[in-house]
Length: 222
Image 1 (cartoon, rainbow, N blue to C red):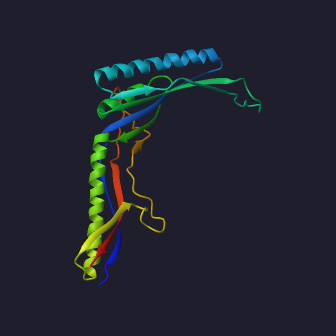
Image 2 (cartoon, helix red, strand yellow):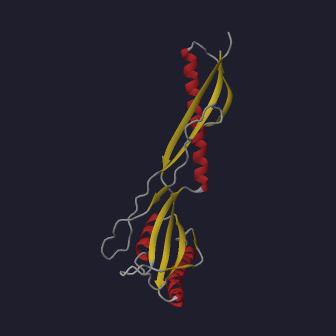
Image 3 (cartoon, rainbow, N blue to C red):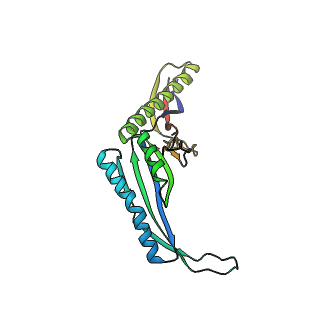
């Protein structure tokens, strides 16, 4: 009897709690005077830099960075429909990575009360070591799903021997476009609940991170 070719897909995903919180925030200033806005942004940004540097030295912050000052101007419209004098703007973006979410919440709650500070968003991530381990585990499970499916198809046809012939990521074996391959998702939070009076603590509820894998495989059965 000629061998039967069986082509299947296998997919698997898991959800895991994030291990790192990456805070994105900006310090902003504006003024009718260009020199004044440069001085103002320096005065607002320097305490944030000093604070993050001190927390990094103390071990409360994994790492942090800041961008150069961005400067731009615009001329707003006045109530009479005419352009007004230029308004000069300046901003500095900061990124800080925390592994202690309680410390991160406290810091965010305190820093956003400062003049000119705006919270952008928070990315929730896994460490590279955890991501590599979980991705390998999920890929192994996806292959197992493909094997089990092919074995079930073969059994339904009365065939006992199932031998793998090809395996690839989704879409690489199919003659027609395949659905988008599952990807690891990165959770993001953009806001926080108000803190109790007297306690500058922002309350965050990070979602679990989804790590997924999908494969296509061909087997011969006889």
